[in-house]
Length: 100
Image (cartoon, rainbow, N blue to C red):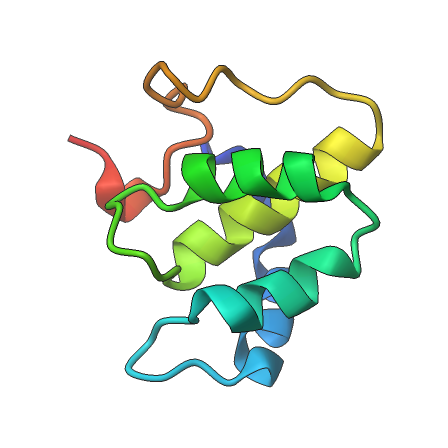
């Protein structure tokens, strides 16, 4: 995970993931929305974050995808531009288990 940018915050984000109450290792959109709204990011930004973070497009976020969502939300709040959601994620953002 050393080349995965969100990995730096893994332990912190894992605590938030666990507190949100995953079912079968995944969080529903409602549970994720509740956590992400706490970042202060706009709803438009959060919609983009969801599209980027749901790497396998199954409508739920696993731990790695949740970490990515948190990382992107915090980066957006700090003024960073989100990646273009019409293009593949850069390798350093793609969750390790989703890399091909």
